[in-house]
Length: 80
Length: 223
Image 1 (cartoon, rainbow over the protein chains, first blue to last red):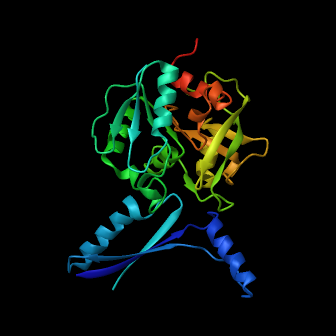
Image 2: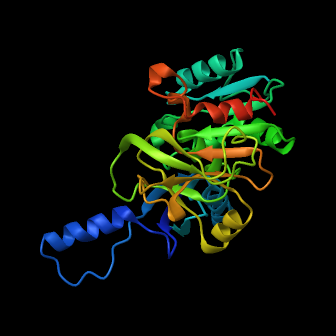
Image 3: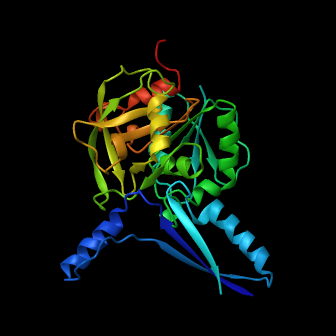
């Protein structure tokens, strides 16, 4: 079995209202010097295969087809 | 003209849409469930609003991958008119039938109010009942209606006359880029819009400004 983590983040230039709100809230809590906050998503998956190359290819397809909206988001894949 | 309304778990504006289409065309639309792989022979397919799949992952993301969407894509390629309202619009962008994306409202708040819409392009299958530049009233109710497209896409969409509606008179409720409220595909047979025209079609609604969209799409106006 392979454990994988997919991280999905907004592309540069895409406005992130939730990140902005979090940035404001952190500032209000007294955390200074925050340049920017961008919110993303993390998916932890368990794949029933031992073949790393196959797992990576499958994960890439999953990202392209469902996990990320590539109009606004980038994704990265890491295998444990 | 015959119409169809798509139904998915979590959509809740389908009844309103069925009522609007029935009242305006005189014929009840057929309903199509998400697992169907073929759509009956109709002239207009409508994806109504709501919260398909609880808005999980991204609004419309899961609905856009259901079997019925392949059938809708095939019909759209044949030139059948497709209208997506609110969640229906989100589903159409997620399915790649319309350009851009719909993001969380800039205010981070759910908005439920009335806005003003400018008919930017009145030379479409969906807006012939209106005049270019006409301002109409429409209700909105959504949390993720903030239209976004990258610079290149936006230029194409604006240049091709694909922007059909813009929020007018400073009523942009969600931060949409260029005040975009509704866009169509480059062929002009698929329209998505966040506002709910089906909720303003008769006196009992307090007005009928939304009626023209259905009258146009169903060809029930004088040519």
